[in-house]
Length: 174
Length: 181
Image 1: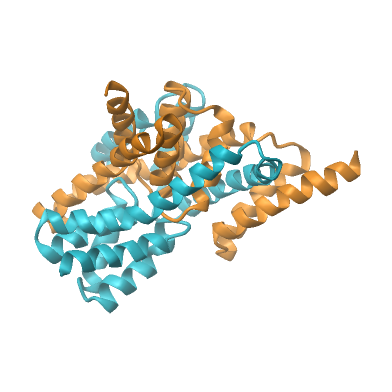
Image 2: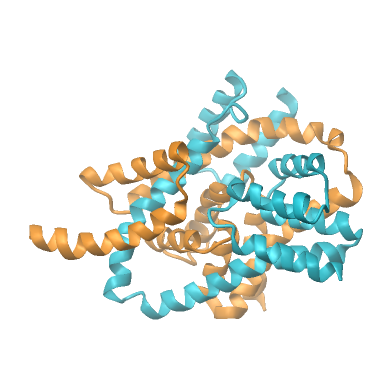
């Protein structure tokens, strides 16, 4: 029963994907390339590349892609994607229930005093991780960065609009 | 039904433009959910991110669950989550079905050469606005910097910081603040 197998494998991947993003690449690779041999290592590299040029979490992207290639049907994509999403949704719902019940609890309030600066740090770390040679390929990258920064910071332009404009500019300039 | 459709479409939009993974959606959610729709408060947003980080799975999905749940419990969470996942599901499905070869994607790749540095700028602005809402003062500004450097250079998992921060917050309020006052 390949659908069940896809569901269970991606459920496992979803369950252990703390930190998100590229932190979970090794885990996905082990499961789909080494353990189940659903795709080859070069196909896996392709999925990573595709994920970089498409929106959405890499875990969801690889589930959708692998689900389709393994079964040659949308149903495979559906079960793999459902599997990878379900653990976070269930755990997040439990956390939400707890949060709204206890958000005025003293200990919970105190915990958030510590959490707020740390969350700022985590977002900052995401930014630092993106400052690399793949993102900043030439001097034009720095200009795009500066323009996008000014447009958001000073002109308060919508991020979606900025992303679209940057995409159009990149298409014509590169 | 109109409300659910609105929740779905806002998160569909966020899902469709979340490029660069994880925290790349922070500026988007801030613009759409906090500033425009006012579904969550500015200082509640940072708490949302803390909770989203404490659960496994993509930050975008976890944030969608939180906002949906806050607005209309399980039914709300269903529509926001579906909205946030559907764009990538449809796009990847189309790629898997029609163009397996990456060569077709050169135009897309060129567009992304400009989008990537722009996304860094968007996140930078989010860091500024988040630190304003985090009520940091004085030496407290060192915390995010230390955390960011530790994650980047020492590859320490964020979940460890979440646990330490929750404990640290309690110690700070009960011991240091009370002791100092």
